[in-house]
Amino acid sequence: MDRSTRQREAIRGLFTPEGRPLSPKEIQEKADTDAPGVSLATVYRTIKALEELGEIVKVELPGDAARYELAGKGHHHHFQCRSCGKAFEIHGCPGGLAALAPDGFKVDSHEITLFGLCAKCNHPA
Image (cartoon, rainbow, N blue to C red; front, side, top):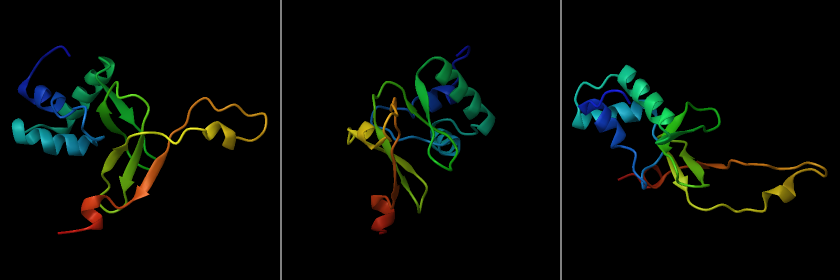
């Protein structure tokens, strides 16, 4: 990034190893706590810059807008809540998925997304 501003640092600080994939709107809302007045345009510019630096990666879930998470987490999958729409990481992979491909096909990658209710939506207070 060419400039380090309080808003950009607030956005950068949202991406942690234990964090979940965030949408641009979620990033804006969370960053606004530390740097009031963060615009969605600033969020998108910062996302682009952090992607170019290799600090974050895009997470694409079926039928939904892109989300972003810290880079370098290794192979993993995601869970998306059908109620609140939040995405969460699933640690681990069932493996052995190449055996599901038709004869003569070669699997070179896969993505798995589970859908349902997150703990908060499943047990509202």
